[in-house]
Amino acid sequence: MDKYGLKMLLRSIRSSLGRYLAILAIVALGVGFFAGLKSSQPAMQSTVDEYMRDNRMFDFQLMSSLGLTESDRAAFAQLDGVKYAEGAYGVDAMAAVGKTEEPYRFMSVTENVSVPLLVAGRMPETDGECLADAGAFSEKDIGKTVQLSEDNDADTLDMFTSRSYKIVGIAKSPRYISNDRGSTSLGSGSLKGFIILPAAAFNSEVYHEILLYCNFDGALFSSEYDTARDKLKPRIQQLLNRCGARRYETLRAETNAKLADAQLEINDGWDEYYANESSALSQINDGLAQIEAAEAEQPLETHYPVDKRKAYRTSLAAAKAAVNDYTLDDAALDATAETLKNALEDLKASKAENLALGKKATASSTHDDDYWGWNLSYLNDGQIRHESRQAGEYVGYSSETTPDVNHVEWVSIDLGEVRSVDNVVIYPPAAWSTESGWATACRRAFGYSFPPTAKIGRPS
Image (cartoon, rainbow, N blue to C red; front, side, top):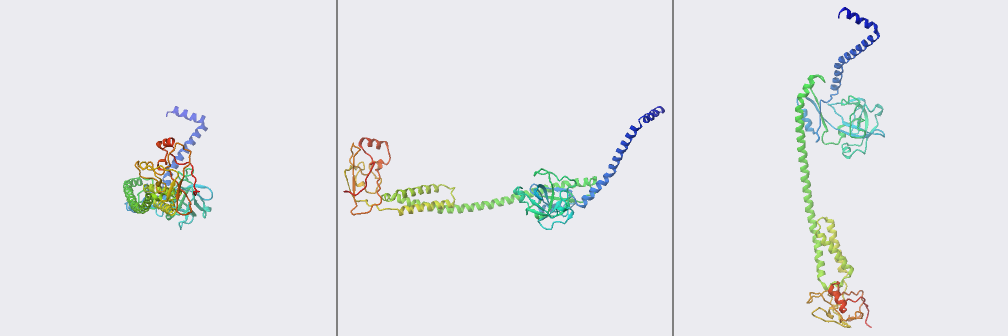
């Protein structure tokens, strides 16, 4: 700078000395802050490194969707560079200390990796005791109870051996170096804090995670540490993949074994079902045979009351349907067979003596026609249907035909002695049991019809 320029600079400084000093102070302050931060970085990193090493913060956190076993933990512990490998459990759940329910992270106590730092109280000694987060609780909370919410889903509640835990200590965890406890799918979406339980308080066959603490050279955040970690990471990833594949095959084998056992139980059940079904069907078929035999004994048909015949025919239809219904269980088949048996017994017990069977019969008139199957002897022969030359179409007794439908006919049965009569059953001829077109035409033209009214009594 020449003499003239320097002179002008000094003149401008003198003219605005206050502004110049303010700018100079701002620059000096910025330089001071930068120098302080630059010089404090090693101290801050050293403090963090010391805290993490004192509490053995994990260098690797390993997780698998199928869980990790004790043999997996032992395999990781054998890797060169790994000093400690420890299995741990962890689950998010809604819980309350008092009346308000909040989401918490429940973790298991670890002894060698990510060791909790006790601030107040003592360590848990039983499955029903716990440590509480120093960031969410204070020493005055010692003695209070952490109560799991029943609103948690069943799978979450099944992860715990108890529903409540007593706070016996307040602790910090190297997993959390800030006030943020992380997010969750429960409650407000943010974890209130953590609760540390003994491992035995968790009901799980596998670890939820395996934590690795390694013998790495160099301080945390140093290039030596990063190099050592990057060197070990591929070996850990490879072993983790093998553990996952082995776990998958184990679960698959266990599932196949359970399926095989279940199939054996199903087969045994079917064998028992078929054996019982055979017994029940045998009872039903025996009942069917007896009823069919009774039905084949036509002269006895008129000896059974109408309601009893209707009851056993209903049971018969149900039994026939049950024979072909393979959805029925043993109890249903047994009940059907029992109902059929009882109906048959009731039917036989209700059998009445046919006093008119084969006795002498007389009538006001009779139309005898062997060709068509009409005869006075058919009046009380006990048969409902007869074989005739027309395949049993017109069978039974008939009075003389007359165009006059409004007239009186009578029949008389000589019982041979005075007898008490409880019931009189009259059946129409087979031809008039249904209103066929031919029967209707004959009724209209010749007066053929079953009497609309009948009077029962002793002859005068």
